[in-house]
Length: 314
Image (cartoon, rainbow, N blue to C red; front, side):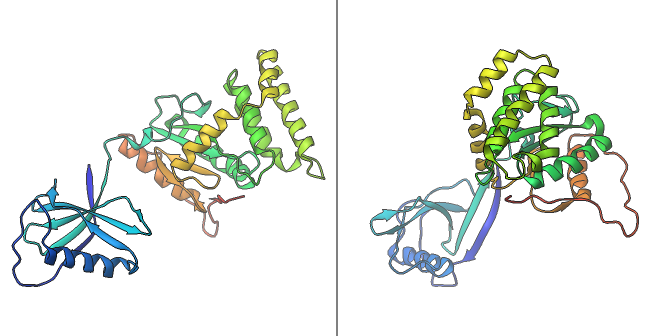
């Protein structure tokens, strides 16, 4: 467990106040604490502040008190503060559990992968929207560069995060998943094609019906090339079960994903317009943490800007 100091504020120089390590705060001490919290946090005057008793703390020299805010009969969840044994210092701390390897925070389970083997030191999980133009650009530019540079050191997995503003993105996710259960190679070939031709789906009039029909047809054709069980594939396409996709979306939201594309490099989130050299640096750092040696640094010719990922809510 790691402890970070969020704020550490001296209550001030006052006359000596006798306090105990546990038990109710004295009225004078309770007022000092309340006045400081109101002033530092700009608590509105109509909010009541309730202070719990001093309790035993894991931090030496401090006891713990719970602070609750109440307005119109509704109370907040208690916030934990620390009060020093001499009654002169109030602190607020946040604990973060770092016992789990960040690489395990985003699951690649039951998803097709490309690049290195399961034992690859770096896992990149991307939350993808097959109708997203930024995703298509990233798919075309970033991953070929990564596989060329890192080869088997990097394993790449896609998870689904179709955005509401993209009418056929959900269908594309479901159809590609239908194929992925029988052929990982077919999944990636289909994803490659959809990302490369997303702007063409739906025709000139951007018809949703045409786009959906094209996606179904592309999935069936790729399934035939991969010699999968056609009846099983067709039944899956017809059913359009979105439960797996929605589960992926729920997990993404819990991880703070709100736009596409979003990458997690051994658990570290990558968002925003990021030059490729920054991505390399993140992967290199992940490799070093795994006891691996990154490839030699690449140099960019003078006057040539490195390519960038441009994620966005599109």
